[in-house]
Image 1 (cartoon, rainbow over the protein chains, first blue to last red):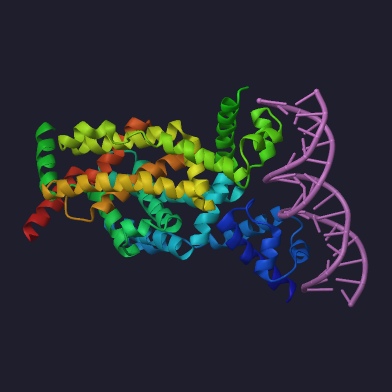
Image 2: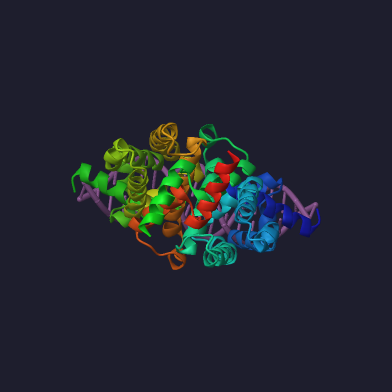
Length: 214
Length: 214
DNA sequence: GTCTATAAATAGATAGAC
DNA sequence: GTCTATCTATTTATAGAC
């Protein structure tokens, strides 16, 4: 196999194993065996095990270039609150469903203090807080959202989504408790975020009460 | 030092290190050094490294005996929805704040496929879903909560809480984005769960609209 | 470009003196 | 109850033949 292909193959195999067992939990021997080569080949392409990890990070850097906010651009302009959150929610849930290894890699990385976690935070998480937080702030000014820290809204929504993904990814039994499609999950979480779990009756009582007291 | 004390000390040290670096990422040598003894002492008290891990689990089993639902018993009986969720929320947030090692240990365990994660799921998570899910079901029957899968409500709420704790625990920068007390966080997440982020004005429009269409 | 063989360091675990 | 010394297996990494 030509050098560049072999290199990419090793990285692909390493991602799977690091995701499964973490950096320290994976041996170069295991990577070599899984790639169907001898251990010496690993060190022919990567000076050290750390270098292999860094090469994975460089790969992630490119993948992260996909704009997660693309799908919500239209809803964003039209101030369609439900569509904005549903689109982002579905994008996040689908991404984690299609890339379960990434989430495990990221969690391992965060726990082990590697730089992937920091990179992901700076690049993706911060961007999401700014983007979505800005939207919430604008909608608060328009009177559609109530007054509260916009970051709180973002944190709450991301919490529901990411926890949902981690549950499905790490615990077999999670789906026994709640087994729904990503579309439905995105819709339900959006509904909870925007109007809560109270019934209309309850909300009417609350709304009447609060208008009296105002 | 007497045997039983030494044993407990080693376990305490091991918890810290396993939480920090994971099971595979921690060496018996490191544990010995941190405990201020030689490596041989570790293996005098625990036949293998795995045995040490199991001993930690047994310790957790006792700690888990604390009833997390105690603080919400009164609110539960009185159908005080806000108090129920706020009390549970505060209990969860405080627990993770006071036991940051436990959360890291649990995450490492879940990723590494050790039994702590499974034990925690069966014992604590399931119990929470049943308890809180049962409450939601009852309040739905009373017309206070709208019709939806009760597990969805629980999942959403736990998601906000646990994600909030993990953020504060694993990422330094999380507090830069959103730095609030546990009391405030429990209150805000409860508010989002029950009545959402929409303003009263928006809810009135929605409520009127939905009563017309009903 | 790939392999076998092996070096060097580190891991878990034991023996035996005090 | 604790230590030093040591054993064995594993892990990262290299050398050199093909």
